[in-house]
Length: 70
Length: 209
Image 1 (cartoon, helix red, strand yellow):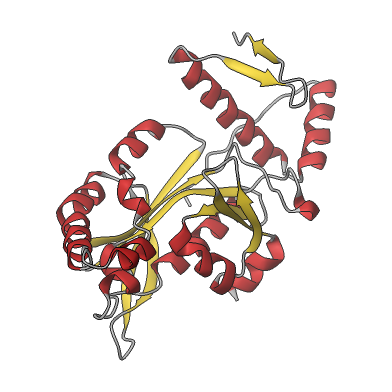
Image 2: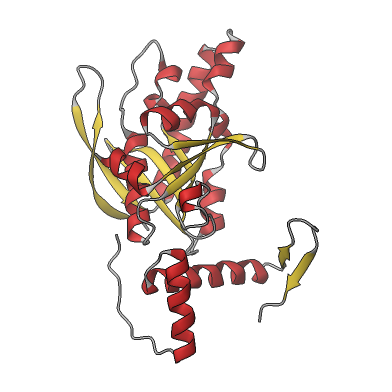
C-alpha cells in the first residue's frame, strides 16, 4: 500500500542462478524474494542484538546446531 | 505513524444502515488509547452483567481481553516482518490486526511451505460482538470481514497470491470455518490447542467475490 522505491541490484551469474532457483521453488518474484530475505535478516539481527541465539534443530534427533551470524 | 489506506463499509444497527469506516495501515497511540478508554470499560461492564451466568461467560470466550496491545506493538516496532492495520468508524477504533509476512509457511498440501500472510492478532471492539452485547444488537458488523480482505490484499502485495492463515480463538472458529470459507486444518497442539485455518488463492478469490 505504501509507494515503493526502485533500485538496481547487480548480481553475479551464480547469485542470479540461486535467486532464480529460490524464486521458482517458492513461487515468488525476484523482488518478493529479496524483500523476504531482508525481513529475515532484520528479524535475526534484532534477536541477536537482544542477546538471543539462533538454532537449527533436527526434528528427529532433536539436536540443536547454533548458527553464528556475523 | 498510520497511513490511510481507504474507506471500507460496515453494517450499522438494524435496519442495516451502511456506514463509512476508514482502514489505516499502522496502529498508533490513538488506537491504543481507544482500547483503554472505550473498549475496556465496555468489556468490563458486559462481563459484569453476565457474571451471574458462568456458562454464558465461558461461552463468550473473552481470551483476547488478555492481549496487551501496547506490548505487542512495541515488540514489533520497526520490524519489516510485520504489518499492522486498524479500522476506525465514528473516530473510534473498531478493530486491530497484526500480520506476519515473513516467518510462517502454508500447511495445506497443495501449497505446503509456500509463503503466506499470517494473521497473528485480530480483535474487534466489544460493542461489535453480538454475543457479548446481547440482547442489544452489535453496533457495527463487518470489521472482521474487512480485516480478512485486507490480509488477502497484503498477501497479494507480497507476492503470496492471496494465501493467508491464522489460529482462531474458540469464539471465532465458526466465523473462519464457516462464513469466511477458510480451510480448517484442525487443532494445533503446538499453538495452545487453537484451531488453524488457511486460505488458498482460490478460497481467497471466493471470499472477495
